[in-house]
Image 1 (cartoon, one colour):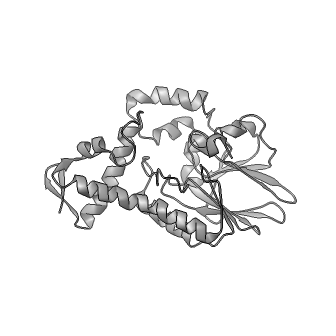
Image 2 (tube, rainbow, N blue to C red; image 1 turned 180 degrees about the horizontal axis):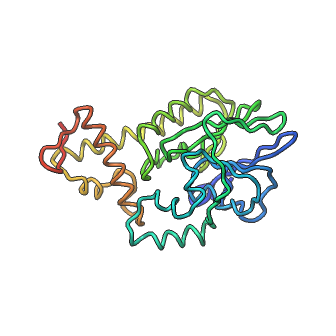
Image 3 (cartoon, helix red, strand yellow; image 1 turned 90 degrees about the horizontal axis):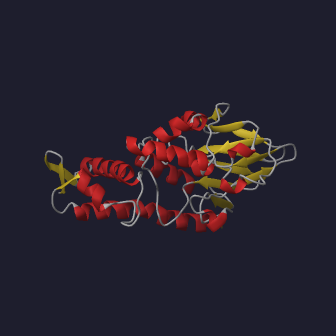
Length: 279
């Protein structure tokens, strides 16, 4: 568990030991100093809080092929945030100085279903895209432990605001997690370890419900014609007091995804150029 129960900028890392090898999943800020020994590192997805401790390891590093280039290059990682140009330098300094992100050009890509055999214990990749294109969980057997990474069950709700994020994929990934019967489930932030499929599914349903709440809030706001920028100002994701260069780009990408879906369902119409209203 990271400080503050692994709340951002910290995170929860996973150590898995077998009879012949061991691995670490998502070396966080907590592993910058005093990291446990491991023969391999797996990264659930290319976000800074999941790789801050990666410099502690000179061993093979693996990530889903869809996030591979972002792990190999800090520039590619930052480009995936879709920030305004005047914010890039500041964020780059934060990635370098606070999260120790240097890029791992030696990283290798895996695919869904890849198995890492540690001797008497296996770690199987479960691709769970949506948060990022390559976001993945890991199923540890025979223990029955499913690490679900940033399907983290927090009250903040699902995050699908990066350039490569997808609301549709995130929902499919949450459904896939729900169908996996495990004994324990582990999250990257705050919740930590959850025992039992029933308890996990109860918390997952609440997490999934945040998406519906966002759409309900958007439909209510569209009781009169609104532009996308007005929706951005209204905010579907962040609370009003939250500031930062990521806020408006994330709100815009989130709003557009919901608008597209609601328009396809006939619940929202473009009543004039660039202005939308609930039907």
